[in-house]
Amino acid sequence: MIANFRWLSGLMLLLALFLTGCSDSSEQSQTSTSGADADAETEEQETTTWRFALEEVEGSVQDAYAQEFKKRIEEQSEGAISVEIYPYGALGTSSQLTELVQNGALELAFASPGHLASVIPEVGIFTLHFVLSDDNDINKKILSSDQVHEILQPAYHEQNMHLLSIVPEGWMVWSANKPLRTPADFDNFKMRTMTSPILTAAYEAYGANPTPKPYSEVYSALQLGEIDGQVNPIFAIEEMSFYEEQDYLIQAKHEQFISTFLAGQSWFQGLPQEQQEMITQVRNEMVDWIYQEQAEYNDERLQIIKDAGGTEVITLTNEERQAFREASQPVREMYLENAGERGQKLLDYVTTQVEELTNE
Ligand code: 6CS
Image 1: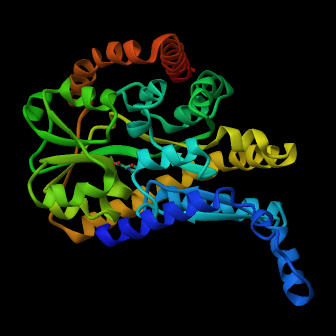
Image 2: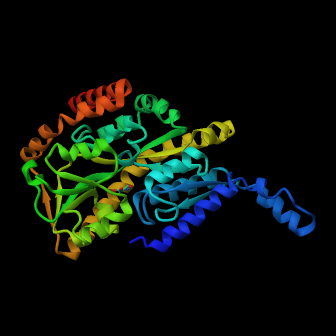
């Protein structure tokens, strides 16, 4: 777990980020002198650093994405750009990372709708249950489409952020201290959720008692019995050791965990055209890559949990899922109240596409 001292060092790092401001090393070396020092500095001046913060620890799906992005950008820029990755715990909570990007203290970050919908209600669509397809090939086509990006982009721009990619991280799985097979099983169940109100409404619809908390507090809340369960993709349940504190994992395929990869809008707009194009090209080329990679991560980690023993894995039948599907429908109204016309357009587009692509 992320110990307090890591948060303290994170705070110090944050302070340093604010004090140094833009990461372009040329800005920091204006007092160059002569000789070998000057040569070394000239070399240093040619490298620009892009800081990329994650909501997850090393070894996670976000880390895999960031490492691959870093490799591709550094290769394509032939060393002119260096991508520095800050895993979860180095800087702050998801909401704090979003603020850092908005303020220009960070260039790149992940921001998951489960937290981000508090700032951009439109992305709350990705926390609604049973909206996306059961088939991830269909979800890939929809989520990487220009249409979805074009609907969402103005909402990101209004918050001084630029949406780069919508990244899947696997099916959400409930971990619990009892089997959860019907909405009635959720009655008063203390379910830890991410912090957006749209997400908490999704669990209120089942009769649960949603308990929003930052990611870093989930393990101790389970240990102390402050919550009865939580929901995350399998890879996260394994790497954050949540399964050690829970007796059941329930696969309802009710929601795909989606994150969004974003940049500061002012920063992105200020980049030279060729660098903007390089980012767009790399993110396009990584769509197939991340869908495959996350599936492998989740399969491997499920096996680790099964091998460890002590956790029963339950997969809901289609009939059992149907009861949750029906109970989840009223939450769409709340989403639309929050997300307005743009939310309506997005929900209409996604649901129509799911239907059309399923019937193809
Ligand atoms: O549950 C959460 O808060 C987090 N879960 C994952 C898998 N990624 C980031 C997010 O903050």
